[in-house]
Amino acid sequence: MKAERKPRWWLRILSAILAIAVLGGAVELVLRAISPGIVADSVREGLGLTPDHPVEVSLSGSSLLNALRGGIGGVTVTVPDAPLLEGVSADGTVRASFVPFDPTQGEIRDGTAELRVDKEQLGSVVSLLTQGVAQTGEVRDGSLVVGRTLELFGQQVPITASLGLRVTEDGEVEVEPRGAAAAGFDLNADQLADVGGGILRPLLETQTVCVRGNLPAGVELTGISLSSTGSASITADLSPRILSDPAEQQPGSCE
Image (tube, rainbow, N blue to C red):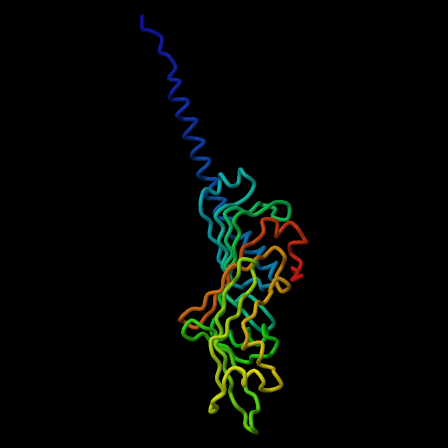
């Protein structure tokens, strides 16, 4: 009489593990297929972009594990030609290690933002940020060179000022004059400061500019980089509750 064959329990366990792995892999593929589209649509809606505006979304890490935590992880969103200021656009990139499925009810983690302003757009940005004191702007030798044309001794004279920029630990912008010139005239900085009733003085004196009043409270400026290509990049950290706390979305204060 043959001995009764014992059930191979380890085969059953292995089969169950394989089934879970296959199911998990399928869920992972589905999440990676649908999550970027959902994020892209939300970004377009939030920025008021048209449905065909390009929005690139990439994910890293396990979508399944992050889904079990209630969100998506390793998110990078890139929006070319995103509206920055009136009539000015920039290439924007936002990164976060984790974003909840419902960001209005949770916290994002390790959120950062970067805006890259092309040299063609830099003049308009400089004009807006200096409230018209400077009319042009370009990156030259690691400095921001701004300028405007003023009447000097009965002539229209281009005047330029070279500025160094850095972000302080408090998220403010320190502006350091590095030189100034009036085309065709040999004037020192003090003489230039008095040109046009002192209109150029803010560009010729070292000063710290608070920008928090022009940014949402949940955004803290961390750096300004001037590229040899003529573009400028601005980086910032994002508050974990910037998407869930309306107070973090309101303009900050310089008081």
